[in-house]
Length: 186
Length: 260
Image (cartoon, helix red, strand yellow):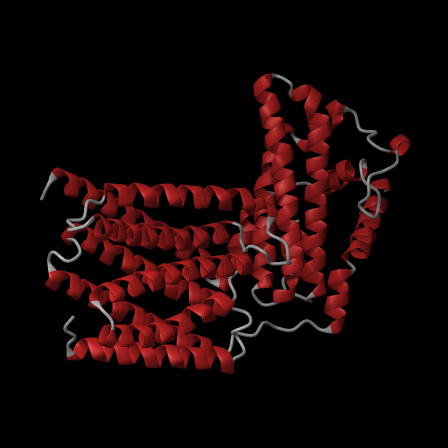
């Protein structure tokens, strides 16, 4: 066997090994046991005070989820916001929870394919939330966190708040038996 | 070219299996949903007939040209199936999922680069540059296809985008066949085309057997009905599409609680 062929076969070996590992990993990840999955998912949720989330969110949006008018909006001071949200750590918890919310929607979607619209909406919301948090992390690195925090953090909270509402409504809409547990967790 | 009994057997089985698959696609009314996949099955039937006649009445060169021209068309249709599957999985509500668009482009770029790298590394012992080019080309196509299927599966699971049963079955079959093809093409690249004739024929037969298994798998799986989801009642549907009102209600409720 020539050196060139040795390199070629080694590269193929690594390539096939990597492909099989990726396929195996994601295949097993995509097929969790439904019964275990629900309880496991709920356990993944980090506890966050729902009243605090509502307080921060309602400071920026009205009852229909639309932004408030200029004079009526953003009454919370930056220091208050920082305290209520719990700084960047609090936002990171929201970010982690947003992934779990999508998993919970996906869980339901396995039985009700029509729930796809909501699951898709939640995925886009989570994307928006992560974008806000990423901006803040960037600002923290450049020393501009204090200036940027009130703007991005409050929007991230609004997004998270609406996500939880959408998910609860989805579970309520399909009369899912686990709604009570979910309400408790959120 | 001398053909043995096993070659004729593969030919006949391939022809009948693809006809069967076409019947399933027509009977289950899936042809409209999977146009590229249906075209691939149709091409397999046509290819069997055309190559049979070219082999018996044409020259060796005309057989070579026809075989590889149809192989290129086959690969293009397989890429069409990748698009077909991707558009089903990553466009769940009619528009491409925005959050996976970047990853998808990145994924295609990376997979092409890796497949090009592998085919560049291959140095098949070949008598003509055309043989070498064809061997490298088929290795590239097989590597790229297998990468696309695996990465597409990874991306969809990461983004929590579900696969409908029939789409998943087509992808599983083609993904597995691409991986086997990849290994076979590695063998062709190592042993060469036309050099070790026995090895070449042996590897080709394994590839054909894998493809026939795949076609049988598709015919059986597509014949079966898709696992039906629970249908929402009219009441449920209304609840889903009037979510805004529900949100309004909850916001109001929580707001009153805050005032207390």
